[in-house]
Amino acid sequence: MRRTLAALDLDPAIRTEVQADGGRVGVLLTVEGNGFDAQDCVLARVGPGATEVWVPPRIQRMPGEGGRTVGNALDPKPPPH
Image 1 (cartoon, rainbow, N blue to C red):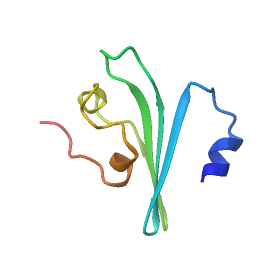
Image 2 (cartoon, helix red, strand yellow; image 1 turned 60 degrees about the vertical axis):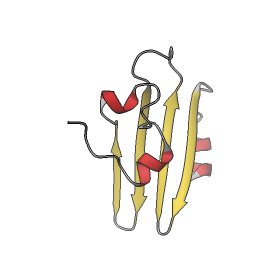
Image 3 (cartoon, rainbow, N blue to C red; image 1 turned 90 degrees about the vertical axis):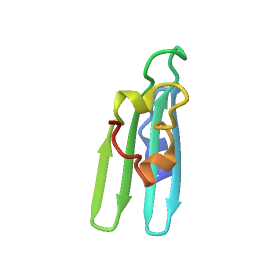
Image 4 (cartoon, rainbow, N blue to C red; image 1 turned 30 degrees about the vertical axis):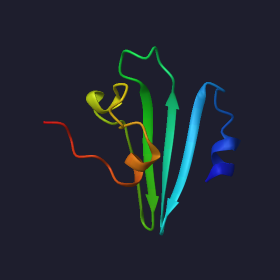
């Protein structure tokens, strides 16, 4: 997975994280923002027979909310109420 991401020749401002958990792999692609607004990120989870890619809800992408983590890719937080 790391080699695949490296081969994409992404902009250096895009930070990537990869974490394996059993037979699944979580991926985070994120760009640092201004520290006040929702931060840009994309999460992915790859497992046997299934790949999911999504952007967490805006509230989870706010600074300090914890939605922009590779852990959230592996075990997504429930949607906000």
